[in-house]
Image 1 (tube, one colour):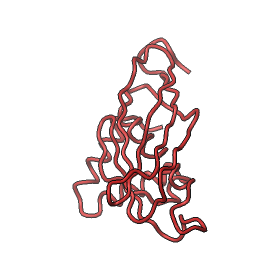
Image 2: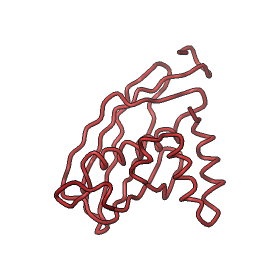
Image 3: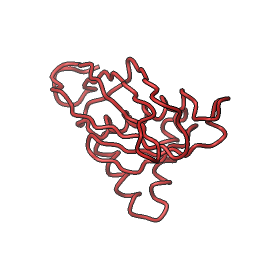
Image 4: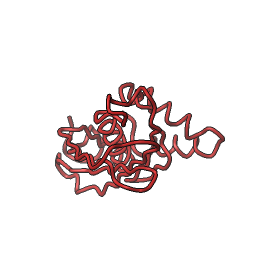
Length: 162
């Protein structure tokens, strides 16, 4: 698992170059192959914040001509996961325990997902809810994804090691 500081270092190294956001997004896809299937693009990444975009295309549409519900959940989980990872201190890790989605309207065209994470105290393992909101090009919400992450220490500072 990559640490938050290393993730942000790689983001900063890539984003300043032409095609760097595309390259960084592909690197994330190598680390998380299932999430690569939707081809989300990291547009912005900072400590506790992620913004990704997703272009509608045939491979992620359902039979009614809009973006498939599972592709939206995938985008929301990836966005919340990047925001979470970018917020984590050294020696901590997070994994999704539960995920849910509220579908507000049909998702079409260019979509943007955003997530902001404020970490709780990490003295002991904790379950922490994180929201990701997905909007269409007009700025209208199309889906809200709620992920509950379990955060704990992996051998870094602190008494809780797994």
